[in-house]
Length: 114
Length: 109
Image: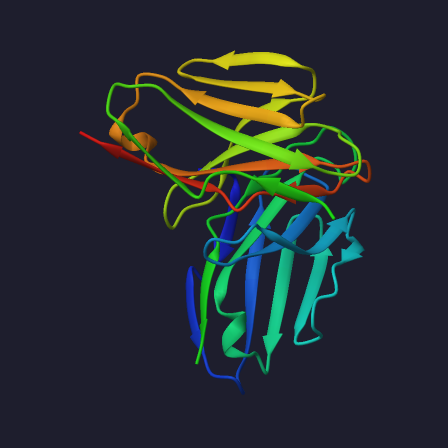
């Protein structure tokens, strides 16, 4: 148990669907992250929120839309995705965006886009 | 560009020792992390090195040489449960984490 939960664990969606991924951290951290993990590739950082403010958006397509209502919750809204978006989406949190913080990960949502 | 290199896959025998290497080229250095990730599960933090030398934590040790841009993770007395992917990540001068693609470690009886 890492203190970071994600739902759903698995998701299958069509290219015209709209869905949302949810992440919640119970560690009292101030920063939250969305990563994309594809097979045999490095983790790709998508978005960073520090004290609820988005501080990074690494050229992610607009079909991915993050939302951070408070320091404990993070959402990733999905719409009109493409098959190449199929991957494991990981959420992480840390004490702060800068400094010597360690990131703690959730179990991920396995997404399949048909 | 920035990159992290680590072997794609390694195989070792239960009870033995294995060393997983990681080399990096990054713009600046503010620490190196090792994470373990079992299939279908979250990456979990193993170790953090910011100074040169060896950090030991039970059966796992991590070594860093900043001048060589090199680290390794040493696993002793291997157990079947150590079968997992091991991810190396370096924090650059902007405190951005640069990730390797991971090393899949297979333990055989």
